Image (cartoon, rainbow, N blue to C red):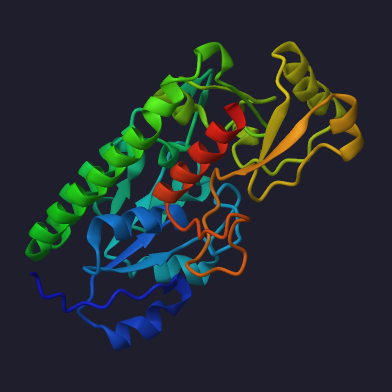
Length: 302
């Protein structure tokens, strides 16, 4: 077993100055937001110190690093960003960071595209996570070749778990007629899951403005949402974690709709978080997000 000399420290990017004094030889890999940090840790184990740039609770779509944070970002040995227009601030990286130290996840995936919008929610796809795992192993091997065997083992373990996750649900969804596999949700973030399990997700909008799921929605959008429920004879609907439920109890009663719960789109919880989901789970990884979402969706269709 490889003896790891580096200590993984899960702290915000603002602590880089302190970190360099504590672990001067550690490779520092920076993730643009928490979900990418989770994927980096899945691929590297304890080989790196993993930091996040966008602070917890901040929206990566609108976040703008301060001058001090840009200075700290330069201390990263590798910066991992998603791309797919999720982090507008990353377009400024060329002004602050060497190109060979930037790794863009979008180079590894095959995004779903609707008009000009490329769906950034690739962490909700088992297929895309496999692609990401392959790419991270190669990049991390270049960064720290002494840990090549660790990276390979981590990749194989992660991909095996993803395979088991798909097997866990595939047969169950296949037993439901495709015509019944329709899910009404307030935010279109689940196209990848829809493609992989042949589920039709109905949502009012698909646009770059709605990627974050936090936009204030007017009466016209709510009317469209209710119209989709009536047209498709759907009696249950989902919101997403971090987004306020649109419908009042009166609306639900009038339109014979039942709230089925909240799905995870881009918010993950810290381990042992006091804000853990209603199922008393800590949804602290992309893998758990997919598992939880599929479980909730399956229950709503049965």
